[in-house]
Image (tube, rainbow, N blue to C red):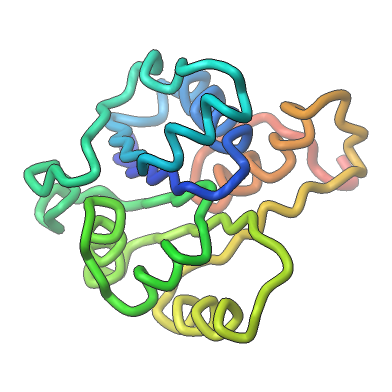
Length: 186
């Protein structure tokens, strides 16, 4: 069965992770039925600032405005089984942890949690304060997966995109996609 995925792109630095994730999802198009994307205003700004373009809306996904509560994944009945927030700022993580559904990203995360589905949060910020750690603890206890944007180096990445892919491929593994990626010991 093909997957239905929500991708929330938060406003922290790390647009390269969102770009590589969308590139990979495009390559895995035979494995998904729908990918719904919501970007914060800061995510759009950071994409342009960090990557030097506005190409985020050129992907073959369904894009929704941050206040579009008519988006299908604003309700559990639409049966989106996984949501990834990449990158996830600590402010966004805090709003999700405390059920503050003030935009489509936080509403979708709330729906995923209430339906006991898979929520994967990819924080890029560092260092963590105790507040951040407690929010991560609460979200983990609710069933979320915290997958920090901590790249690995044992695959000897050649450039920024390869480096970001070490995180993105892990996120896609956690999301249940079948992908060809570097595997330790293989």
